[in-house]
Amino acid sequence: MTQHILQGRTDAEVLWHQRRSFLQGAAAWTAMGGFAGAQAQSRSNIVELVGDALVNGARLLPQQTIQTGDRLETGPASNLIFVLGTASFHVRQNSRLTVERGNTLTTVSLLRLLSGAVASVWGRGGNRQIITPTITAGIRGTGV
Image 1 (cartoon, rainbow, N blue to C red):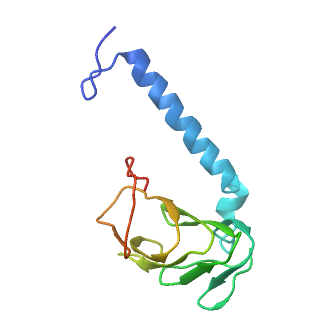
Image 2: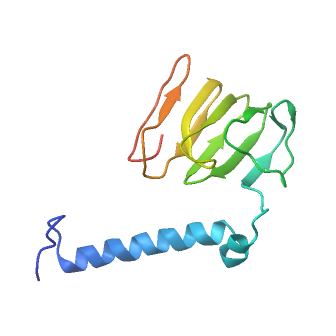
């Protein structure tokens, strides 16, 4: 077997990683609604909403869309998962945060967490910042 030039892996290992990446992409595509979801331009970017959440001070409904610049708050026993561009966020209970705009309308460049807990995965791209009074963070690749 030959060695892969960039990663020092065999052809079989490279093929395994390519298959794994494809399956991960297919799972994400399916979770976002597949082809029907891609065609629905007005589809909500909220994946899951449990309990009470506010967007800009008003009650958040599952069919609404969260945009960059919005202020989000979750109540007790609440859970919110949403996608903005190439980033996804899992906001836990009793959290207050703002996602601020990057170069485009759907690019998040700054996550301002005032209180609570958030798990996020960011797509590849430019610089990103997380601002919070105190933080305990685990960074794994593009996930925080």
